[in-house]
Length: 253
Ligand code: ADP
Image (cartoon, rainbow, N blue to C red; front, side, top):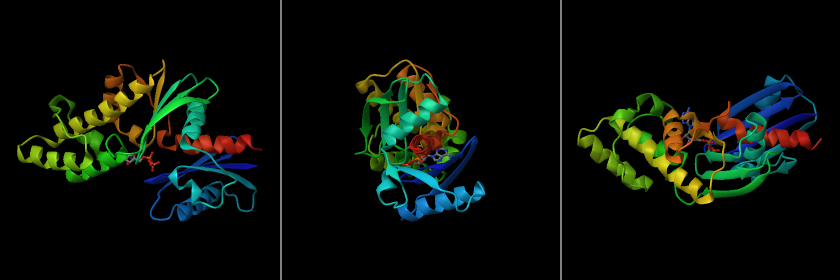
């Protein structure tokens, strides 16, 4: 039996296919139709694995999971990230997941089961959306933020709100503050906000950082500094939820 996990997120749709020891991954922008995104991912994964008519078990997660009709089961992102992290980084007891439109902190036990969680899905501050909007105000893409930031020139960003931060950036640029310094300030703002949420829940001994924003080294640094402990980033950090979903699909067999 082939196991597929789909994480159809607000920004990116991620898929993982497990066939015995073989693992395949696919990532596409979710676009306007989460259903189409799910179908495209399955087609791409099957083609990579050179499979056509094989029986496939699919578990879907992410905000778009309800729109995708081809899943055998849907599971929350929190449970999928917990399962994925337990497989990738055994010994982790706290997961910080920052995606496109929300951020979450989850406490898990040694078997990857969720013990408690807290999330922010009400406000773009502290999410990937905040970084996308503010990067655009600086005329760069989110995947360039790490390379351009200059932590030694970190600017203070006082606006928590994404819209106000955008205007604050324009003012800072006009005042001659460097882009690198502004980006370091933006990274600090996200790290601070998410760490404050984590501390409200209470963190454990070993912290993992997942989701697309974990690709950003500036956020990794500021999150670790604000939490006061190292953060472990798994390989395929943006695929952790999809991998967890695929492992849950494999468990169903
Ligand atoms: P969702 O599941 O909500 O679609 P993801 O976990 O896929 O979210 O994360 C999407 C976010 O990850 C984007 O908003 C962006 O901020 C960030 N991101 C994506 N790719 C990169 C990259 N290459 N470098 C830095 N940040 C990235």
